[in-house]
Amino acid sequence: MKKIISLSVIFLQIFMFDSMAQSMKFTSIKITDSPIISFRIQFRVGSVNEPDGKEGLNQLTADLISQGGYGLVTYKEMLEKLYPMAGRIGVIPNKEVTTFVAEIHKDNLEKFWNIFEQVITNPRMDENDFIRLKDLQLNYIKNTLRNENDENLGKAVLEEMLYENHPYGNIEAGKISSLNSINLDDAKNFYKKYYTQTNLTVGIAGNFDKKFIDKIKFDLVKLPKGKTNVVKLTQPNKIQDVEINLIEKKTISTALSFGFPVNLTRSSKEFLALMIANSYLGEHRTFNGVLMNKMRGDRGLNYGDYSYIENFIQEGGSTFPLPNIPRQQQFFSVWIRPVANANRHFSLRMAIREIELLIKNGIPEKDFEETKKFLINYSKLWVQTQSRRLGYQMDSDFYKTKYLIDEIAKKMPKISKKQVDDAVRKYLNTKNIKVAVVSENAQMFMKDLLENNVSPMTYQHSNISQHILDEDRDIQKYSFKINPDKIKIINVENVFE
Image (cartoon, rainbow, N blue to C red; front, side, top):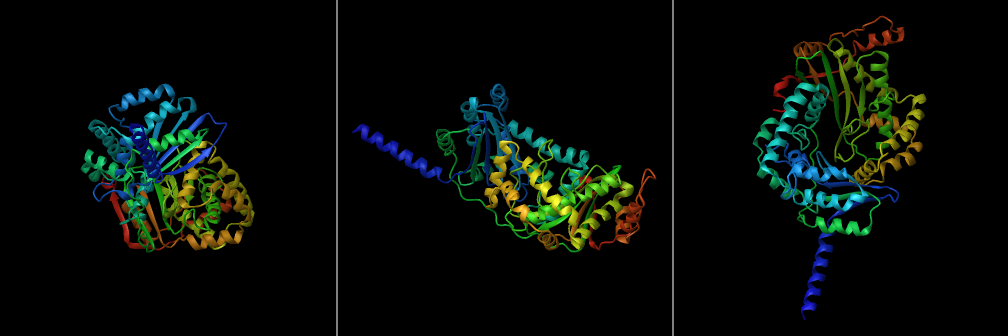
């Protein structure tokens, strides 16, 4: 009789386990000859889920999970356990998803997973770690972003401008005032509410077996089942003419960023066509873009000039985009890396004018096929590691599309110049844009902008071709319509306050 009861209990546990595990989503890539197992454990939670007045809570919670230990094991003790097996756990907190990233040699898989799953299901969340990580987040805003990195400051200000009064309207690090109001219980409650099976996608790549997948499912059912968390987004505010925020800061150079929301994501049929146009205009950290060639190459204005048709974060020291930062809504932007203050007006004019020329004339015939070939080959480098390949596959699952890199290779050769030009005219514009400027003497720049003053280019040498000088004469008086009610100066100490 006891054996019958015991078997009934076992069958009931198995049934409950299978039932609960059904709510988890899996993205897996089997690579039989790989000695490495890659993980990307993703939750459908981001800064869009932060309560008003608690901006920065998602990032702080994610960091506390990944850098706070587990159970009774401190973060220091956790690192001591991970070090001999070369294990490391990182996290990417973003607008709509938060992804924990890890890799381990298959010989250490069991030992590593026993730590990793505890980090996810039983984070320690100690007060001292909370204070340490909150101080780091505050320091990033106060010192790194405001004082040490003008170009990232400009990009962050632009994104806030683009999504004012919108769920995307705050940077992931939050605001000084909101961070100061967050306590440990806020992080614990945020974790309990959103770190659930229903919000979970498990990504794994390498030479794993079914037995290990079953173990993952068994261990992660410790998480509560929860409810599906997909935030319904409002449309960004309409932009009227050119709206400008000038961040007043003592600096020898000016950082410029501008852009506008676009009703296009990787799931849109014109995405690949617009990708071609964007690569021609300003492929990130390459000389493939016309902005880079004309602004840096021909004129030596700065270190680099790039454009993007979706949110872009560079992964570490590479030149490649960081996977697992997908969004339901995207934006087009141009990043003009710091230029001499004397050339700030000229540089802004030139970049906007190049977009206007692309809209008006389309991508030049001679560059069209070359750009397609470049992208088809260059995109393969985005997935040269199995972890990045896994990240891209998960992003494709987010957008409900086929694997992006395969789609580029399959569909891009068939895209016509007309399709690219049509996509440019449909999605890009130079009339209604927002501009973020980080510079000194902002009042003087505002006056030059509003009065549309001529802005001749200043060169350090005289060996400039006549063609460039002729083009400069057009650029220095190029005009765009500024909204006088939407241009303002903000002291850097008040940004993200």
